Image 1: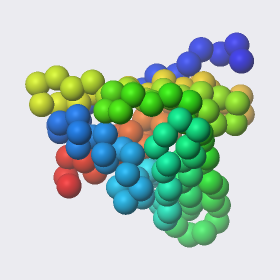
Image 2: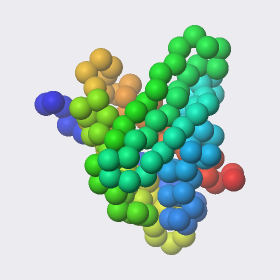
Image 3: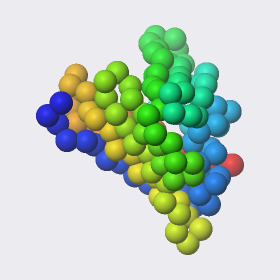
Image 4: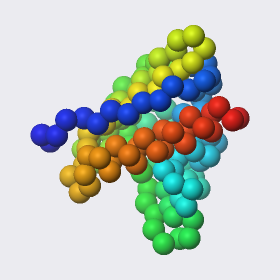
Length: 137
């Protein structure tokens, strides 16, 4: 793909271990993994190892649309970063702690159906939802 990666980030007011756990554990993923309050993530599974699968069901609360986001891990450095492949595209998630806060940086290959701006806004909205969840739980 000729397009550059899209990068989003946020700084979470929590230590690295909590941020890593809340980002990777299914019981937490289902609480934050959606871009808009009209959507939800009713189920998630996460086999956090190289070759392991991550599957999150994302759907509109009114039942009008839904899909499974599936990926396979290609690299994992526990507590620091991981890379996964999804549909021929790749994403990397990094966790950098400083002064009791953790920066989460996500870089991903864009798809070709939606604009770069729309993809960036959607993924950022999910990451913002993650930040809010971690900081209030």
